[in-house]
Length: 128
Image (cartoon, rainbow, N blue to C red; front, side, top):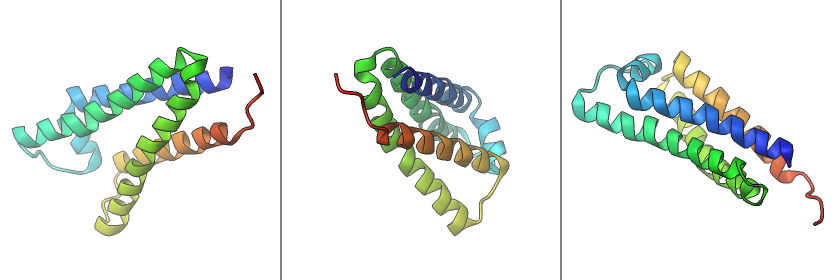
């Protein structure tokens, strides 16, 4: 259970940091992704989806890491939220040819989170 809670703490730090970057530096995030400046409305959308969403995932993981009773729930929700992000990112890379350092870094982060989380979820749980 300690490993599960450490994993959630790591996910919390990783996603909160990513979310803060997207929230407070959306133009820099777009630059890392190889995209141009979309203007004020586009920056607001980036803040919401590349800032708010990862921040929320990290906050949930952090909250769940604080309690053994919430730990498995936190991993399950994290997997359900991160898997579609990775699928969409890979689809974009394949369909649009939009490979950039930023996209590849986020894809690696998402693969790591999914692989470790799935490994933890498939472990046999001790009986109470």
